[in-house]
Amino acid sequence: MARGSSLSDDRVINEINRNFIAVDNNISDQGWPADTPALMPWQNWLSNHPGNARNGFTTSVVITPDGRTSLGTSGSGYISEWHSSICYDPTKYLGFLQGAQEKFGRYQNIAACPDAKQRAVQYMQLAREIMLENRDRNRPELAGR
Image (cartoon, rainbow, N blue to C red):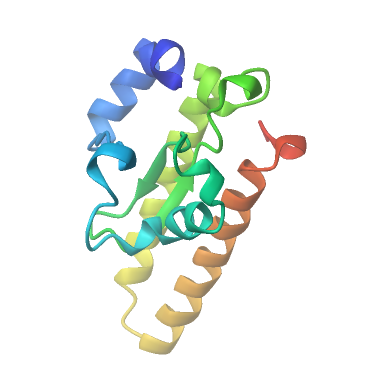
């Protein structure tokens, strides 16, 4: 996937080392991480596409430290999509990481909001934005946006 391109780029490596904790999880060998609801959309997708279970899928997902919220995905990293996938373009991959970092800042600001109702509304708005972005990243006709 991105190991031979985006994840080999010094700018991407520096961004990950500075602002993220990288975890490599091969679900075929290790299964799904426990207590990580942020990954449920991918787990649900794979369970609804059983033919892909033996091949798996490749993507990068940024989640909050508590594992509850996805902050973004790089989308599909299939080799057949190398021409459009963020995974194979270090500049786009770096943008994906920086976008996730920006969303995490917003997530932290929402958490600091003293008004529970306002906090709930803001969380829902951010979650919807992230969900739509994640969905669009996995649609080849929209890839690279």
